[in-house]
Length: 108
Ligand SMILES: [Ca+2]
Ligand SMILES: [Ca+2]
Image (cartoon, rainbow, N blue to C red; front, side):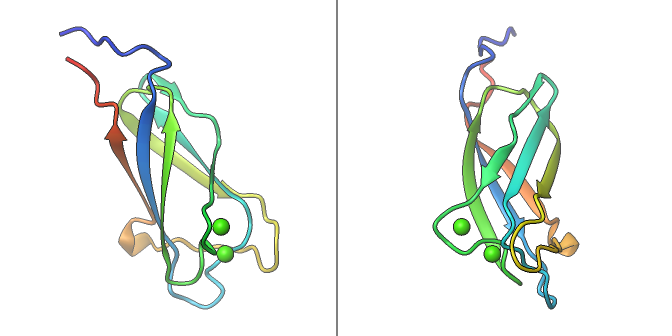
């Protein structure tokens, strides 16, 4: 089985971020995520939509697209410390960040 997908095949990922339900857990800073796959690494992807994101106890869902980076190995999520009270706490019991490939399954 040979993979046919080229490096610039677009892959869509669904990213769910759980912010803890504790005081001041939320942030209004700019949040970015980097997806590390076994065949490449994404650009830093801004996580934002029309809602007020990353509020205390909130689940935020985003869709982002990347080149085909292969199987997801690791994610890095971070913010730029901007805004009022930028400190942020992810809900570890809820895994904090959940990433699923939506489109672009490797072809076999
Ligand atoms: Ca916010
Ligand atoms: Ca927003």
